[in-house]
Image 1 (cartoon, rainbow, N blue to C red):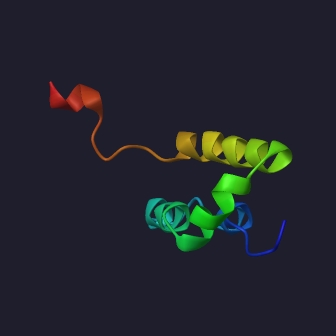
Image 2: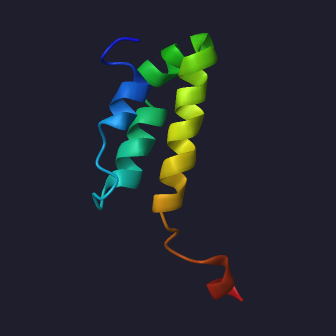
Length: 69
């Protein structure tokens, strides 16, 4: 994997940053990701899934579904 691939970019993000969600979105909707994703296989795919699984726990929604009732 190149040092500029989206997975490497994601791993260098600071999950404690208040702009973390925006940073993740910028990577996932960027041109590099669109070019990289169709060729993603095996370890790279598992790395992406593992990363997203870990960070989804650290990102809390602005509104809880329970607050909408």
